[in-house]
Length: 610
Image (cartoon, rainbow, N blue to C red; front, side, top):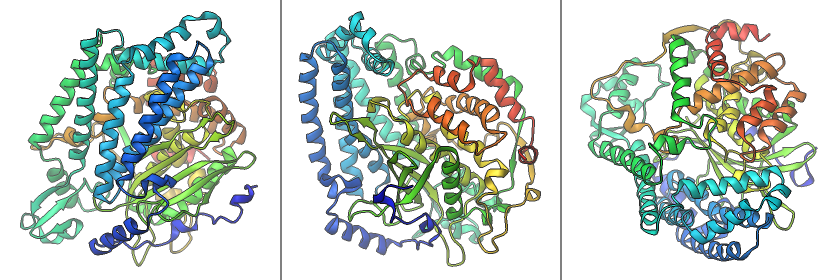
């Protein structure tokens, strides 16, 4: 049963609604109205009813930070130290995480600009705190007190050690001059990362006369120019995909300079604080731990991979309306975890675009777990990138109440048309399930400390819940629960699965293209992109051992929540994997899991699932 406050909420039918695309004039009018009437504030934060509110929110966070630093430095060793450090982290993250999303996703440039400045200022403060000797000393005294440490619960000990880890990789052991250099390098890296991300999503323009007239309608036209904003990978026209690929990935000298400076600065910082390379620093705290272990994994895998399979997208789209997919997710979560998704009414000014939807995540016994904002549709200036953003992390507050997590899922789905609702390709459907996996991790990671809430865990574990959802998305028993032709209501048939073979490495190199300049994961996943493969290996093992016999097994769903989702980053990831699989997997186990996935084509995989 839903709690009383949710009983009158609507179901997910609004995802079937056909949302008209706003033209430039309508978008401008919406933003004008937004500024005048936005009384509630973004995500319910009162200060953020206008771009200027970011300055106010930032100042409040920094004032609270100053008070908490003083408190931490004067509190004797004990569990209270860890709580104060987490409150410090929460005070900064509540503003920084929200601003990190707004700076790339808000349609109003003034909001994006204000959020970007806030990100920089909060980021600078974080780097200064990570080299604050007095603050570090208060934590060191706790860690050195064996009697007190032995009295702490495992999660509190883990969080204390993680905070110390942040000090160590930031150069706390250096002299004052080198610590200042480390802070300056970190701030420079933050700026370069932001610059690279902006450049990675900027469109490329080309004289429209250069393109054949019959494909121009696929792209945005601006005067005599055509804007190419992405790869158009889901377009059925080969020529459109070729044109988009060559134009969008055309090398940009300024973006190349930014990337080279970013890589150089990362390496300088790593060596300054005592690591051989940036990769050695970045991989501390992950499951892999060292670049050598990563290379062992990747090289062993590479030796055994030759080909993979895909499916023909156009055959599926009519069966994958957004509404049907959301109902499918709701059904799956209800079966596995006792969770339902409810449409939530929003306050004026709470949203940044009128087609954003808010979901309440509700457990059948525990009640409201948190909120998911669904920013699913394409719009001007919105990056073509599917992402999960933590806006507010969950934590146990001093008053005993739990601070509910808030996240955003950002996709780039097409708008509906007069003749059809929003239809998803298989790739889009899989991405929707993937990002919802992150969201469930955030909702169910019920940690005491927000520093380790949900997806705040090592990168090579953070992708496990999301990739596991891809296995559910490719299982016929799951798909058959929701896939219906949007016109006829016909269920999807296994016989329309079509096998197509392609080289493992995908496309050969195309002259005068530079994909790396558009690869935004170089920012958030620097030295860690292997994480998708390692996480896929773990997800594969979890799927085959726990869910392949019955993808709706509630007992396994509860075990999955208990062993893997509930801890966030508050437990060593390999211990969570061991708890789920009842074994500690080796590199060879990871490789075998991935290779075994390729031993069957897509159609056989569906057929074998029955």
